[in-house]
Length: 281
Length: 356
Image: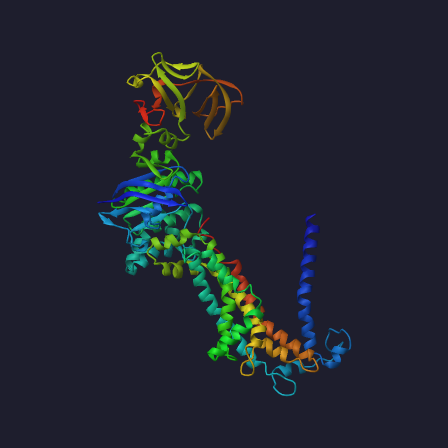
């Protein structure tokens, strides 16, 4: 029975892994093909089934001749995503701690209403926000700039950080805060010296969400930039001209997911470790 | 030289957590707040610590009002029922934490941490993280952290509840020694277990529904509980309370259960009373009141026998293991000399001379 269970379990894991990995392998082989290799039916193994070509990869790093210089958009994407994520995480964590630990009252507005206000920013479809954002950035003279995009992304990412962190802080026992204050910490010191160092799992999840949402955004990167600033998703789509260059699209797709995969692998180990065992049992 | 609270009141959603608490706590003394769950014990500690501001009432320390002093500037420490430590810091850094906040010299911190770790038996574990310790050790860390500051006010909120029986006994012993040495601190300890208060032989404050019902030494509260409520709270298992009456012919509990009027009830006027007897003062006998067994709980070497006679229900606390079948008939003896008498409204009318 248990042997059968194990067999079924591993079969299921293998099947799922195949589903997840197959598109990546497909993109990988495609990135080494030429127009001929792609149109001549499904082939997988280089040299045996098709003649590999580095044309797709070469185009990523050359301007001219159907190529895109991917390095510029790549760097812009890194700068915008990382800056926006870090600022969102910092502001969002502070806001979340306040919402989790202190009671606010402004007329009929209570903590739960403020938390919902943050989250409600994500309820609206992005299209609704595009025009206001466009006008705001135009007014500020920040259209088509990295700074403008960072500001917009903070507005989009901070709700995620607040949401995740409020939930996380609500699981941290209040007695930990009380102990810190009784031991001589002001409210900010309590947050900084005691709560924050024990919040790694929450910070990792919130940070990962911010990075993923920021990195993958196409809509705002597309509507709020023209010529001066270009983010990676927009640059990749721009590859698509009269003839779809599947080889360089595949290569670009792989290059664009690479940092998220790397971050996920590094952060994953922090998720299992560093919980609050020891504070309360 | 003391902590005085005057008419502390705190209500949350209309429920009184503290209802006019006035008490004076002296330095160098050990106070045990006894009350059931939700009696307001924790609310009282939170108010004394300054973690919650009372709705009304004042707290003064040596005459100075504490209301405007924030928690982090007060000289208070607290040990919780849950084992609260800083998970990211080693045992050493946990204990040193309050001292570092006071910016003490490094050598002084080292000296104090090592001394207190020795006292509570953590000297070998200073490099560990709290998560790697057993529950008892974690609570020792919390205790060390609360002691190392030498606070004016040391609050312990049911610190032994989450420990297993043996550790509880052992730590209770150590607490007595440790608190005996805290000559300038006010120690306030809460518990739901009156036996713990009796073991500590401390000054007792009995709380119920946010009110302070009785204050006095553990022995005196046990011997003369002011009301039936105190009698129930300050006895484990709770005191048996039997409505009855006194008349010229003696003491009447039910139509057919009568006892001769005991000597210590001589001065009472005839009328209805509520009579109380500690479960430990009920004995099984060959002759006595015929009762039917409703439940026999055997706990280690003790037996709690729940019996019934007509409308009268009693719990007897017997030492030794007594196996009784449900519905079995047993004879119990009530010693009139050990009966408490309360007025029907609940106030104590007379207590046994021996203290029950």
